[in-house]
Length: 341
Image (tube, rainbow, N blue to C red; front, side):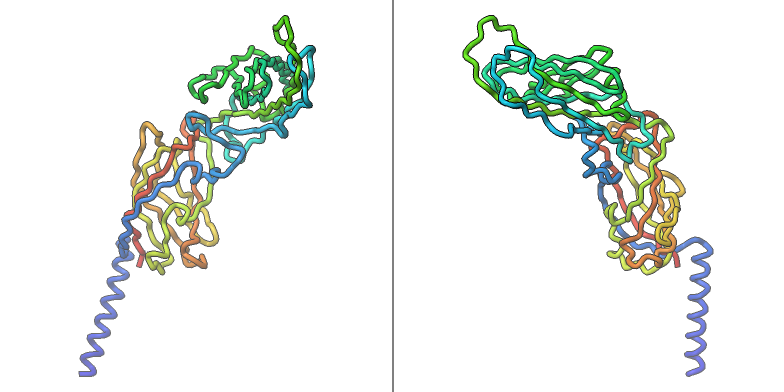
């Protein structure tokens, strides 16, 4: 009997070894069901969700956001204004964020916010200076307006801004001034100028405020590359939930993208771990979501102290004129994990 048991045990062990080798040779493994759905927005995926240098416009398009270093707060000034009175300068310095370092920068919109607490309309004159160019804008701020929003720029559509926003179409020269706000600081010197009243009422003094910012559009030429590193936990998959002990495994699923970039895992080493896709996730748009089947092949997982810390380097390749929008996202359907044995 002992001999028979030994033979059976040896036979089972031999069959197991042959089976494992056969599975490996055939590229087979053990499938661990996941069946998990998650979604990540484009700003979160790209790591710019909390970047104060980027903000969405009314349509959700992400733009470089540059705010004045300090708002203008005037000394008390008598109204009606009897002569030109300088109240201060706004200095706006734009910084190109890392995500836009290879992007095409487009002419900015200058967004101004005025406070006129007086009971009379007040005329503000601003001299915009940038890169040696100069232009003048004139804005009449109604009485008691806190705030009065004015948008200055070429091809500004009023319906893209809140009700009550005043849109000023600039002269061509001002458009040129705002064409390269990344390379040059923008300085706007403001003064109050007399209105048109012929009979001045009794004067009273008021404090006026002006603040401002630049909203700078950017887009990506076709083929522009962006590289980001994310853990699978960042993308909604907690690998530790599935008790995976293997050094190699494949994450199988599909991704529906409205992001205008092809997205692939590069296979670049991160802490001894590589993750690679054979085919990229195809670019989509909010109007035309595109779904791609995806297999992410992970190797070296045991090099990480915790499997939840496994990270991948993603390569994003832009379609022509790609723009980022806060409404873009990746909807990820994790189907299963194939553990290579």
